[in-house]
Image (cartoon, rainbow, N blue to C red):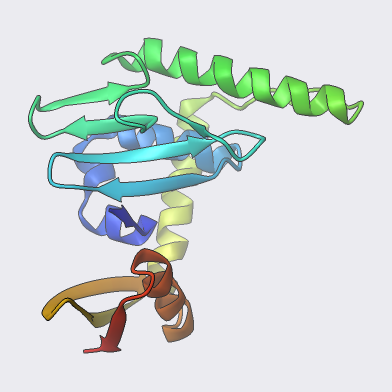
Length: 173
């Protein structure tokens, strides 16, 4: 199930799995779009390239933690260095094609992880200041499920609920 970044961070996944934190810092520092997922067997991140296409491999995630294997998988590797190299290669190919189509130069990705981690921490602190928790009840097929959404406003939280649960009824708990 797709979840919000704030929910992903609230569960402390970036702190528990530093590979997630490194990937998130890289994406934040290079303005790359990410989506976050949590299922029974996996928790993962999808990274999107310049064409808004997901860079995926295992289980359709860029990087995920398997609760069954108790291991992080990054593209076609369980290794940060190899997985990151593959991600950079795919992102660079997409960026090169976009630049060629628009007669522009390719802007290299920032890979200075110390700088990127500092930017990630800064963004996280700014985000923590403005987030608020909203509790919803989802009603479907006679079942009720309680869900927490963290966002800046009730309107954004409701928009997220509609996106996460299309066609379902939900009420502020």
